[in-house]
Amino acid sequence: MQSGAHFSLEDERSHGSESTGARLLLTGPYLVSTIGGVDRDLRSINGSVSTVDLSGVTEIDTVGAYVACSLAQKHGAEVVGADERASRLMKAVGPSAGGEANVRPERPVTLARVPETVGEGVFEFGGGIKGLIAFIGALMASFGTLILHPRRFRGKALVRQMELVGVASLPIVGLMSFLIGIVVAQQGAVQLRQFGAEIYTINLTGRLNLRELGVLMTAIMIAGRSGSAFAAQIGTMKLTEEVDAMRTIGISPMEALIVPRILAAFLMMPLLGFYAAVMAIIGGAFIADLTLGIPFLTFLARIQEVVPIYDLWVGLAKAPVFGLIVGIAGCYQGMQVKDNSEQVGLRTTKAVVQAIFMVIVLDAFFAVFFTKVGWA
Image 1 (tube, one colour):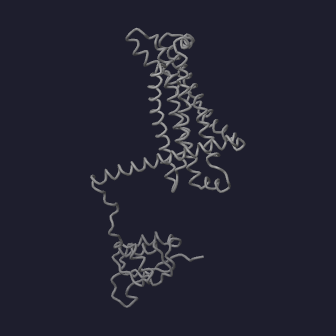
Image 2: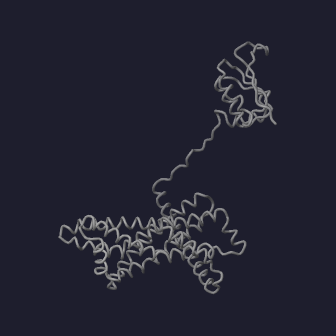
Image 3: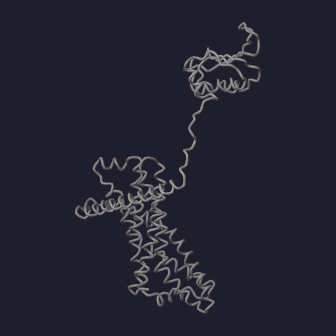
């Protein structure tokens, strides 16, 4: 066990020189683990110190060297008795230490920086497209393998993911959809009242939620909730080398991790979309009963008369595609995690942004397509 660091103050006249101040003699090991006992006392020295003597120091590290330099600078004293190691450390941590390099690199001029950033973005986009195509190809190969060898399919993993994606999402999706239904009905009634057509609030609420908002808002919610979870879970497993360990023992990560998650999002999205549309209609009926004088049950009965059945099929047709997009975006970004934990956050953010962007783009495409085929 190391003994602690010590110090003493001696008059310079005891060493045969003219007294110009005290000599501060440091003894023992001056290490980060031993200096704590004397650090406060050293800082409280207020007298005149002309010399800091290190001849009694048995061991020293950068903390001890820094303390010695600080004492010498505070009292304007001279450091003596330092061996080669102590001198080198004091030179490294002393007030004269420092490099000539800039703290931050010089920023390139705008004319060079902008093309460089654009070029990097283009190459990153191209690499992302290539990686996504490879991922989809591996996913299709895994589906083909599972079709040929159905015993390899992990049914329990699928049920678990369906529970996480679907059942666990019911409260937040239901509440969100109920409130959206209230907003749509209330704002629609305000505008239709100008034309004396408040009764058409039922048409507006029913068609808009069954055809568009129910599925779209559910997809956005699932992208933020489950898509981000897919990316974070798989990314963490990549970072901790669990995915590599699975490959080592002969387990396909695509079959064990990716397929159940994508299938769960694909299967649960139509159910969640229909549930969201129903909750939105109930919200509209609730506010209509309170503010418009339309009875709750009359509102619901009228929905069956004014909303064509193909609006329901349009919403249900889009839902699996949106679920597929959310699942693929989350799992793909999770598999791209590497190097450090910061990648988990970055890839999770990318998964959510890309999923929401693609969902909105495809929703616009579906809107135009179904209008062209006469399902408007």
